[in-house]
Length: 183
Image (tube, rainbow, N blue to C red; front, side, top):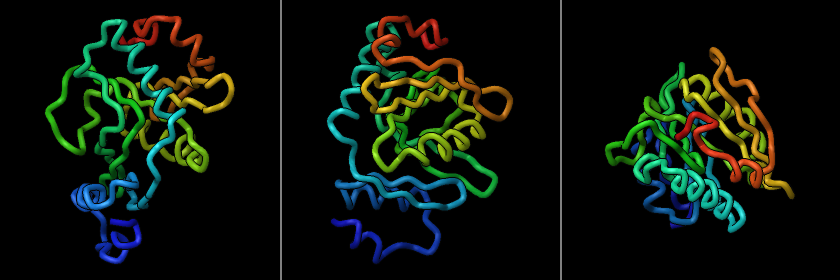
C-alpha cells in the first residue's frame, strides 16, 4: 500500500495503534508521531545508514552487552506534555531485556542513537533530542554521515542534553561501551 492510500484513510487524531496499522499496510515507509501529534513519514534508511547501525550493534554485542538489550529500529513510546508519541530510533540500548511489543516504554532505556540522513537533520538534532531529554533517556548519540561518521554523544543534564564528546565512529569502535556506562 502506498503512503497516498494510507493518507486517504487518515483518522483525525493518530494514535500509536494507527501508526502500527499504517506501517503494516505500507512497508516502504517508517511512521513516527511526536507527543504533540506531528506525523513524520520517512523512507527506509539507506545502505550506509544501516551499516553504521550494524557496526555499533556489533561493537556493543562484542563487548558483552546482551543481545536482548540492543535493538535496531524498534518503536519507543515517548511521553510528552500533550500526549504520547512514537519514535523509532536507529539503535536502542536498555538496562534489561524488554517484553515484546511494537511501542516499548522508555523507562529502561540507557541510550538511543539516531543516524542522520539527508532531510532528517532538524528532526534528529533538535526535535528528537528535546523529546528524548524530556522522556528522561540518559544518553542520546547522533551519528552524522560525513566522511568521519562523527558521533556526537549527549548525556542528560537535568531536563536537557549536554554534549559529552564528539568523535569519529572509528574512534568510538576502538573504545569499550563501559566507558560510556553501557557495559
